[in-house]
Length: 448
Image 1: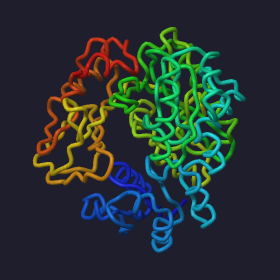
Image 2: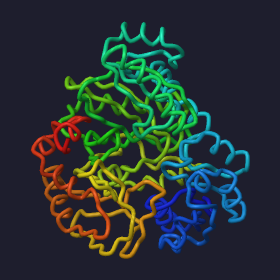
Image 3: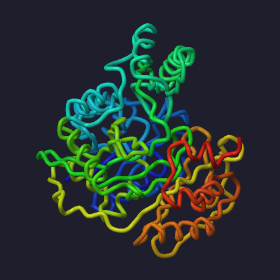
Image 4: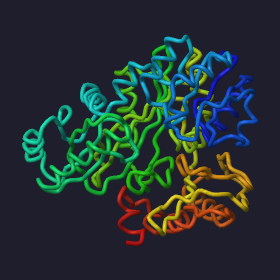
């Protein structure tokens, strides 16, 4: 087992990894930018090093500076968290070349499944259903128009790199297709330094269902059941839950098996998530793999009784998974609400600033993963997430009731937050009935 681990991230996920390491008796090294200097969670690490200015491009995305901190800190492994360099195959390869274990998949597996076109091809080879689309990147307008005519409109244009909805456009005719290709490529180049885009049939009003899986270095791959992430805005998730409501048992089992099949075919090790869309007839289609731990991993932890961060570390250290597939049960129901420093009534405008008052909810089944505190200054340079409210109860109805109560107890003053929207979601009759889709929030719950 590792003696020291560096966390190449910040905020909530950095604190989450620090806590997991402390429970395992592993020393931690944190890195921080000038924008995060003085954050309380840094004092919980055994050491911390400044790696640059506030801008993430000059700090958290600087591979050389992170490797230097790792060498000075004498670590054996690096946990990348989520975001930043977590799905950067070059970073994983550099870690390997420096004899530092990257706590995640190999750079080869990441290259195969991190790139959406390559992952789509791997899914086809593994007999995992995919949405009809291009076999590779769109290289010219003539090819795009011909393919779109064969597939049928509407068409979804997607960047092959990155995520979070960047580099995505929906085209309902030829004019929108041509303009959308250019816009998506430009956005993808700016966000990911990769202008490659591909096309697939746009499935109207699907649900977003993803499967958590993990593999070790001994040939074992298991799934830890699925999560439903349909409550989202512009591809940014707002509420996640496990298990997925109203998903037939046969579909649930098949979608989980498909995720494991793809992971095994790619020789994938460590934690990953296989994302699918599910149409109104419960047909499911592969869309991408997130080759890292995800923001919403706590709902899986709650229903399976596992610690995914500790599992990641143990697998990276060469240990076998401590359970077989048949031993992983899904019990109860978990809901996660992302609390962001944004104003949902004004187009989700960011609201950085100082938290002047913070009162957290509590009681049975309530967990809050966060790095903020009374007086914490939310910097304007990074993702706006303040924390994650996680609820676990025996049934979905009880989880919803507890979540409503917890949101009513929650007090954050000094900045705008998404708590008011979260309250509306948890009281929405269609959410309660489990009959929502990925466009539901934008179409039915937001002011136009």
